[in-house]
Image (cartoon, rainbow, N blue to C red; front, side, top):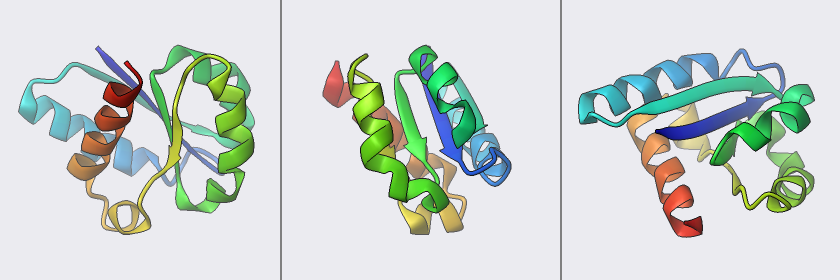
Length: 104
């Protein structure tokens, strides 16, 4: 089971992308748990996931959030703005999996 957390300012704008990522995973037969949260929930939610991807609107918080998550060995990266804007769930899924594989 691949566990991916998406984080944006309120958790709303990423929910559509979550749906596209889940569809891409289902097509490939990959078991996933992908959820979107607002940045206010980051501290309580990130330990449950293998990777955290940030929406473009909270990319400026990358350094502080990745430092928090590093204490648990969880990578945090920003979603490519083009993939985000075009809602390319397959590409974002690939990126998340590559980050998990790089750590493990």
